[in-house]
Length: 297
Image 1: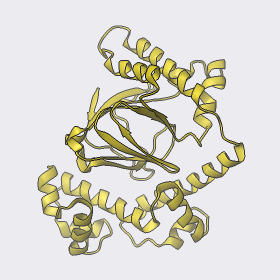
Image 2: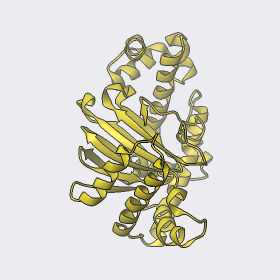
Image 3: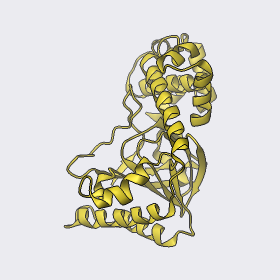
């Protein structure tokens, strides 16, 4: 199991890199421990794989464009394929232990175009209204399977077959408890998220430059009103605050991975001056740039 301290994102698309993920067996298992997780949060991102998770200890906030839930010890759930989501560890951070399966739906679908894919996998994956499927302590049998799946010996003969069988059993239970929304509502939500992704790509490409709402709207071929609505309805934030967050994430990465000066980092990440960068970083983390570099290195 991979122990994760941060996530790596494609700088252009915000899609997460999954180390060790291979087409031969499209799955990785990972563990997040709050005491070792940088900044205590994962920024907005997505991945084609589904994310099946279980909270062993502590609590974590999961956000998707249309829902927000605090997941506590003994609960779990699934983030659907290609769904924008973010997480934030709730204090005390040291208490959190979160385990995850990230896997391609093809792992349980079997034959492409076959009965399993058509009846059980594709309807759930394509139901974009099902952004986050929750499992609470009342879902005892499903949660029991989920816990057992993380206890499998990855080095044992037959591990892949046993894991595949468990994931299929869990998937079947999730498919049974979900029902598709009306198609028109699903299409509207998908169109909004697609425009949002285009604007996110623009921000992640141009965050070092001046960015205005009209520029963002033009990048997604939508109105300024649609731009504001997309950020608010899906990410629960404004375009300006999202730009600030991206700039801070990029600056923090440079603080940890390079020896560049604070002034240089501030200018290269779109903050202009080191004093303004320092003020924004302190408001977010409670640290000055120097303190942040020292603490997390």
